[in-house]
Length: 268
Image 1 (cartoon, rainbow, N blue to C red):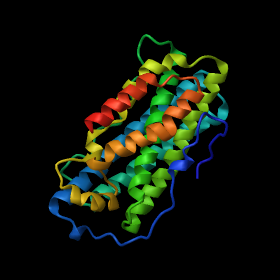
Image 2: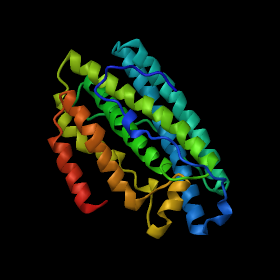
Image 3: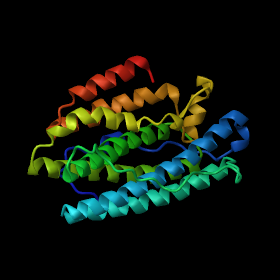
Image 4: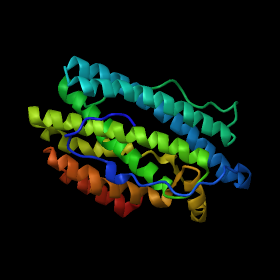
């Protein structure tokens, strides 16, 4: 497991549960609609991992410019390598489920500038760390833990556990840096921006839509979180980990709580 600094605003260890019994991968037992959806989800994840890798490259450079603690800079660089490795695993899984060579698996990695332009450089970097690590990676940890709660093929579970292990470390990197920044000065400016960060975490294509809810357990066995569980898992992780941790660091979560309640009420 990747090393990670202690003493940040939170830990996500509580989201990780032990693996269950394993089975052999049998894609032939899946309906065509399920197989295609699972393949497309793994292909989309590949692009997500490539994009995350590019963001961590940018974060590593920015943290170095800000003379952040060396262990955090090293963890950001390692996270970039982790995400590229994850992308390779996701591509392999997409091919396993029959993603056709003729179908493009994704474009080159994207690393958009993080943070509103009105913020200064240091504040934009902190915005990017919170959005990428404290929110997106924590939510990824919750989602992966949820799908791992259902028995599935050993090959799928091995990939999911590998990715989950790294996402935990990436999340801790973010909380450690937020804790570091909070000790150096106020981070309260982040509060009104958290809803926008959370909105970016909601990735509709990662969730099954237009499929029978009875297929939910089979989707989860093959690494896909069905739409019926999406909001439940997302909102629960916010209340269990994200919001308390932000508050401990001095970030008011009233804006984010209202966003979460609107999401819970709408169910999407």
